[in-house]
Image (tube, rainbow, N blue to C red; front, side, top):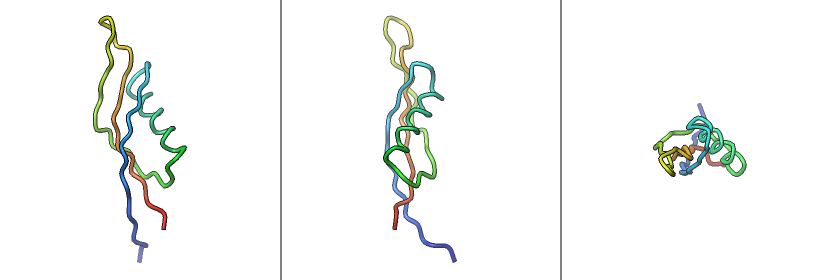
Length: 70
């Protein structure tokens, strides 16, 4: 029988001047510095910052799912 597990979800926002995929990678890399047991990400929102009629930053809001340690 499998061990029971309990997970937690925390939300983070990350940005990149390169694109959405890069913003996700940056956010994930930062999350792994302080969270252990990450099992998945859920992208909740995509946004862009605009200045002078140009896109300056791609932003993602994501939920990081991780298993709590016993």
